[in-house]
Length: 338
Image (tube, rainbow, N blue to C red; front, side, top):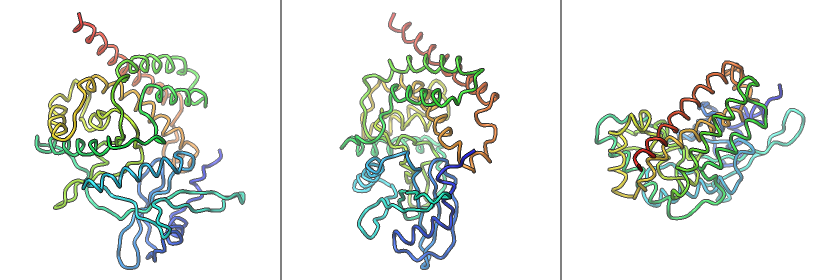
């Protein structure tokens, strides 16, 4: 099985590329961070400064789309939101490019961004104050997000979910025994989701705001990280990922998040009905996210059973549960209208 372009990018090669692109004198230590889509490394310079470099997966985002991520970070920083901005290279750009020679002599181009290292631990909300604090932070983020669009980023809607489904089917990735049932379930789920998502206001959002992307820095507060999945989408996407379970199981937490959020931003009440629809989009996204890495050496090593018969049997069950949830919601809504 052929590998991916990323298999050519070793930690040592990455460090050399950063020295060349940014003029840093590194001490030679390289820490490999767990990142499934991009390649991310921790570095130190000869004066003890810490850095994080992100090499973007080739073909995933255009240069314009990545720069819109950086623009969002700059807008957040200008509004005094706690984010980590990429630094400029000697030419004044936050996005650099490096060429490496592949195994067959071809030139491989990688886009990269360098960030100052920001330590911290994952934030786990426990008290009411914690949930209010999180909601306020997301409300401030969305206040900044509404200021301008990002036309080169994806739009989080049912149409995008259908594109994910088509990608999986066209690549013949679904096991033949599960393909028909999986396609039927996913299509039904997207049909139901379309009615819930249509008409919701769209804006710049983080897109992947689970708790692992919110760090707590003792004595300095919270910081938002990893805007790589930034999209134009409904605001509630950045709230439901923080919940401990389904919407029906997380009423207290969602109420507190909303209370904090609405100190700074307005949330369309129809957004709550879209949460489980957004979950099925994320399930499809996650499958595509993994599928696009299936040629990587590390992925084949860590997930040897991905895509096999047992894997797809399990996925079909998960999709059946989610579609049942959407059907129940739909019936409940019809009952309330009656």
